[in-house]
Image 1 (cartoon, rainbow, N blue to C red):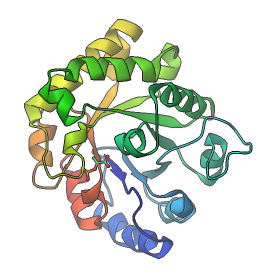
Image 2 (tube, rainbow, N blue to C red):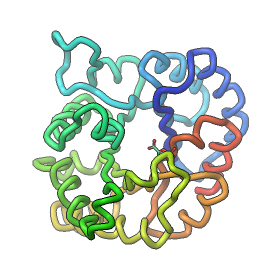
Image 3 (cartoon, rainbow, N blue to C red):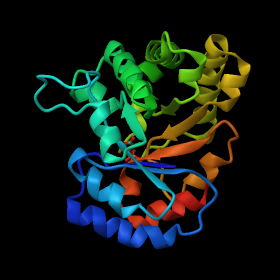
Length: 245
Ligand code: PEP
């Protein structure tokens, strides 16, 4: 279960969250938990989870190790601060920050080289779903995001299926819709990396997951977890989500 905090929370609010959250998920062995705070709060977050099995990741990265790229953060910097994960190709980055499939691949490769596990986000926009192009979009985004990876590298990757129309809108995909998309992604993974790799692949669903809909979604065996935005900001609500895993 992964929580994407987007551009929310100061360092103090980050520490407060973990102060409450850690005791709520104490003893959790149902699932892996990862939180993606903003860059400036990564250190606070890493320190806050020192004694519990919760991991921290970056919301984005640059593909270079260092250089004259004002405003960017590299994989090396993320691992140095204690990150284990990184989000790549989130739809908000594709939509507002010119993230392309080509950049997603470069970021995925950079993350893997540095020992980070990338969660590559894919998902169709509402007009793409309405015009019957969902499958094509998912196949293309998936293929571009993992092109040229070795089987060994692919085993470190997770995919988040996030229909863009469901993110932050309160409009969740039905469990059946999500399962259909996950199954398609898994088939594509099998074609490229073999059935075993596809079976092992963790595919998370994201898009308005809340404590009151997560159980229905997680009943689908195709869904291996969730990438949660808004509902991960509150310790109580995210702990309920974790418990539904
Ligand atoms: C997200 O940010 O990846 C997300 C799924 O957001 P929300 O849960 O708020 O829709």
